[in-house]
Image 1 (cartoon, rainbow over the protein chains, first blue to last red):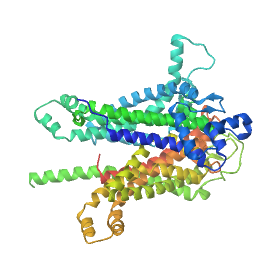
Image 2: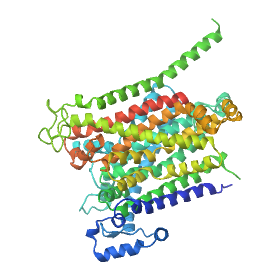
Image 3: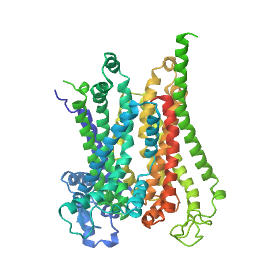
Image 4: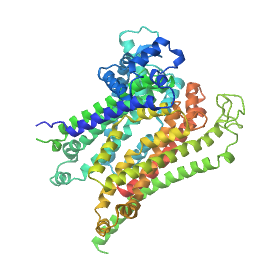
Length: 324
Length: 288
């Protein structure tokens, strides 16, 4: 019994891709100023006449807009994101070299925030309206108001500068030839603070969903039935509540993963962590627009993948939503 | 006193205790927001110095003359904090107003005409909600250029989708109420029914969405300023942190007086509005 993937959902994802690509195409062409500058990402004066001619020919700036649009789609479908005249490298290479770092810290922080958020949310709902519950709730609402970059800066000030426990920037120690365990520890110690920051920021979302979802489940008739027939608290909690609560939480987690990806723009900037988010910041401050655009498409793809995973997981966890 | 009486009184007491918590949240939020707004309005009288003028040696630690020290060009940081409230709150309030106007219009129209038009509009709202939010914000801000107006526009046009969804679901249920059906069956034009019977009744919900939007917009303004995408002339808490970061203040003891205060203020401002939003939402749909 497996659910067919919803055609409407897929159409929706298709529309999202079209919107993202079209935005990317239109923005540099509709903004005031020389589109050549916005497309090349460097001042025209810095380009040699050959470069300039090459860009104009490549994106077909002389052709009508619809032809340029078709060509733009052609490039994207064939995985050609263009060339960064600033970094003097193909953009695809830049993205591939940054992606693993971002995957590392977002993946780890997703695990941490999922575990912490689910546990705290469950405790909170179980002890509804007690001091524990209200204390946690207030704490989580406060965390949601934290500026993410500031949290990172403060953690660096305390743990890296004040106490000198952990490195304050980068993903590895520069110009060191550590091997084996020393190398592994080097990578881990650089990842700890960014992962803690991202985890703290992602926990309230998981917590709120878990708490709410569990409160709903606790109010269901079958929980009262279970209690009435004499099932112990433990059995009610693990046998009846847990399973029915977890489905919405997993969905939220999968969708959060997409958001967490976008959040790295700020956190990686603070930690000078060489991931995709930092690449966006570097591209923005260096006005390297093509790199910024390519990264935006990668983020869009990540969000869609996360949503797709959520769609596929839901019926596996909650059999009530399966259709035969 | 009968047993039933006693039970009823206990239940009423419990209900009162329960309703006290949202009120407490709301009052705390209101107090925070009130203090910050006063600070922003009376900034010229409260601030000891003009934050745009060099008044002392750069990088001074806190002293009696400069309670929070000075920044990298010798401007008084305390005055910068007080004046910074103006930009942060103004951007938050105006951007949230923009978002609420778009969100209410879309929500009401989509809810009142739920068939073709409404479902097409909500399809669009869903697409906006899926797009990676922060990267899109940055891309738009980078292309539009750095000015206060652009910051407001970019934030406003990106955060209306959630209010639109909330308001639409309310309108959907209002639409089938008897008095609306009565008005329509008497031949009232749609415009009149919507403005007279629908819009006024979305008030509480719209207020909740608005306050929540202010809370978000304050954080987003700070993030944009921190990334160097804010207005370079305006002093906001986010731009103070941008300079603190680019001058490496958080790698020196200066983090205690240069990095801590603006961050705490951003958090307080966002939290103040979030608490008010929470207490309003709790009134509409109790979740405690």
